[in-house]
Figure (cartoon, one colour):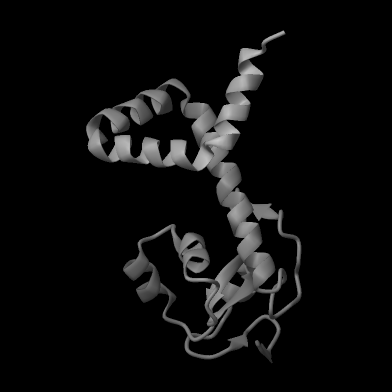
Length: 150
């Protein structure tokens, strides 16, 4: 018996690259129309889109934190899911300072994406919020633990 859904799936898997390329070309030629479809879908499924974005951001954040050690470089705190007032307790810190300038340069809120896009550059470490806030500016010393941080 002929199963259209199964047949379509096989065709797609066999011709996936060609179909994706064809779709990209159409989107480039019909940018306004394509953007209209995306906007229409987003407004119809706004909550689902926001939920998926949140999951993707959280997954990326954990991936980046694990790459840089997965625990605070000062006190060793390692709970990746711990949050205070809906903000993650572990975060990425610029080792030599200059985080504000860097964030302005790359636009706020995109640090994790920037790190992944730039293939995990050195110059970053994981710190918990307590240690991050208590760092002495320009030095690698945490006031809370009175020790030099890696």
